[in-house]
Image (cartoon, rainbow, N blue to C red):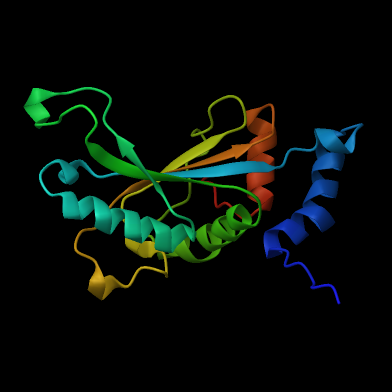
Length: 185
């Protein structure tokens, strides 16, 4: 007996409808020209880790709970005396998501986390880099349902970069809009 392979909801949506919509909108000749999600990078900077190393462990555990994948600890590249920072100290954590985990994270981000953000008026459509990648920041990591509000010590911010195979900002914005990203007008 073969086990049925699990496919995330957004991946199925992309295969069944988004790909066709983008093909007609931008009139692609080849199906491989249609933009797709490539990866999602989530970065958490923990400046307080210089004074207290327990804070970095807490941030790494929270990021692992949010993404379902073990984060890499990021280290400083040089010493800065005014920040009491030495070369090689751990100052943050990051995760790169691909394939099923990436689609699951984007689904939770657009349907659960972003609607929970206080005073949310939409994502800035100018946050594209010119090559089809989108960057955004969250001030509080507690908007994700995996984080138990009672057990956290500190509220962390995070940067989320969505990398696509699109060549222009217009193509990437059309792709992310179809995936449910709520852009401001």
